Length: 272
Image 1 (cartoon, helix red, strand yellow):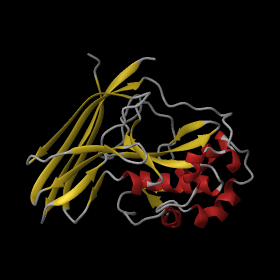
Image 2 (image 1 turned 180 degrees about the vertical axis):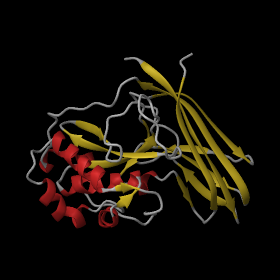
Image 3 (image 1 turned 135 degrees about the horizontal axis):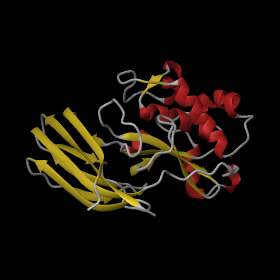
């Protein structure tokens, strides 16, 4: 398969009153079909960064933000397939008794995904549809058309039930709602967080940011669905996955430092 190169990364500037431990989840997973060519961390002032892998297999970095102003930068070069993610209209759903043990977790309620609260609506809207890939796509179609993308209408407290009531949100809210509908139908769905460059796709007018989408278990594997963009895309670079955004937070701080600024980049680089 032909490949393309993508440069990704981010910068966080914090102001802290005291030394503050932090976890960052911004490094891409180095796993097929994506390969990490290089990575680089830099900090001002100098900080020690220690790496580990969490229980979901996500790469994480630990550091201590010093009192005062600090900057953490991450930059990487990633090789991605020159193709959009797979799709299969014939991929079937599995009944709960046939699901793998480690997949069952993704049928349950979590911090932001509430299949128990949205179950009646999920079954009313999608319960009579043919089971399988096409039903997941119908869920994405509904979420994409029902919700309006708008910054400032949701926050770190907003659940799938909240955004379903308001009709506004950002990509994580689109994803939480679609996941909740899937789980209400006993379909395993997990939250995915990563970089999404504009490769062979029109650029968004919004400033560059991290992206959220979901993976749904059909047949014997995870399949990618994107309720926010609702199209197959090239160049998806996965940082991490989990039950919802709580498991894949870009920065978790054990304190209350002020985030002064955050910038994200994800753009194609020429092949050398």
